[in-house]
Amino acid sequence: QAVSARFATSLAEALAPLGTAGPMEFAKLVAPSGAWGKVWLAAHCLDKRLKRQDYLEADLCELVEAFRAHSKAVSLGAIGYLLVGLCKIFERQSRFFDEDSQEVQTKLSLA
Image (cartoon, rainbow, N blue to C red; front, side, top):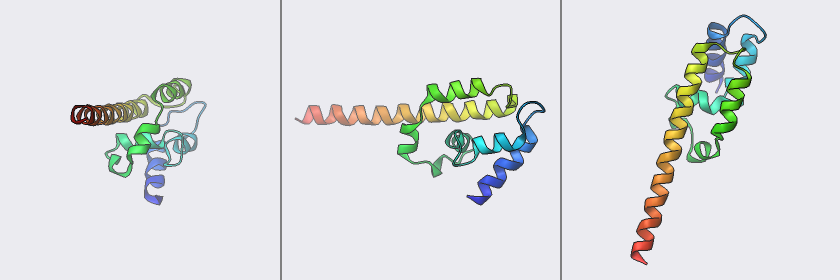
């Protein structure tokens, strides 16, 4: 966990633009316990650390609104990474929905 916090801090310093938000604010948002932490982990191939419940609890609409609200404070490159993470979360949510629907269909056909 300390490694990911250091990674987020160093990346925030590299990607955060000059302006209203500093690198530390961005680092807090993408920290594993931050508002965008799970999205950041999903974007950086660390999705194996995320559990099924983490994917299902993610509210994509709320996250997109938060990205839009902080769009001036976050660099375009970082927004790109966050959008990749959102796409991975959406893909995983869709896969879970498909698996659940196939399970229900199988149970119905056997009943």
